[in-house]
Image 1 (tube, rainbow, N blue to C red):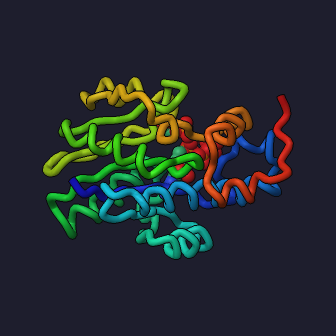
Image 2: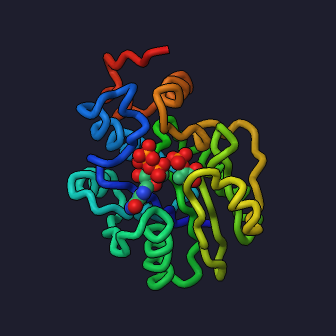
Length: 211
Ligand SMILES: Nc1nc2c(ncn2[C@@H]2O[C@H](COP(=O)(O)OP(=O)(O)OP(=O)(O)O)[C@@H](O)[C@H]2O)c(=O)[nH]1
Ligand SMILES: C=C(OP(=O)(O)O)C(=O)O
């Protein structure tokens, strides 16, 4: 199955607010962009991915991510993460009604294309499926096959909401790079240990993350 990925990104000035204690407000927007660049680059490089759509109102991020091969759509609803994802998924389906679609967070700087391919291959077995984050509280990916509506319920404690909504939970091993989202300094340390992409490696160079 050839997937369309929908990746949401907040305006960089507001993104990754929980990183402020570790990165300060000077570095935080650059890190948020770098995470998104490494996420999009790995997604574009995944053999199971047909195309990548980024939904964002950030002009600079839009330019940088388009340069990596993403299509950028504006956050027209301007009503938060789930509205942005539902809108982008509708845009995809308007052009290709049978497209399999997966929403993927933009904060996966260690993402590996081959691990993403394994997750998408597993997701293809279900009409609607999700992958919990490393903390097993949130969600990093929510997928729908042809004919199924995305109904995204990302946000705090989204794993429980996606389970309650009937989506199949993907219990895969060896896909840590798809599950390691970065919200805090501790998460960034874990992602650096897994091995981040080149944009994040550069943006995080010299950053001293306190214990
Ligand atoms: N387009 C769009 N993307 C969003 C919006 N809110 C969050 N996102 C994106 O959705 C993903 C998860 O978002 P959050 O964890 O809520 O926000 P964050 O910026 O990653 O981190 P915090 O500021 O620390 O909450 C990230 O890729 C965000 O950039 C929104 O209103 N519109
Ligand atoms: C939006 C989510 O991620 P985060 O952990 O970045 O809040 C989520 O897990 O649904």
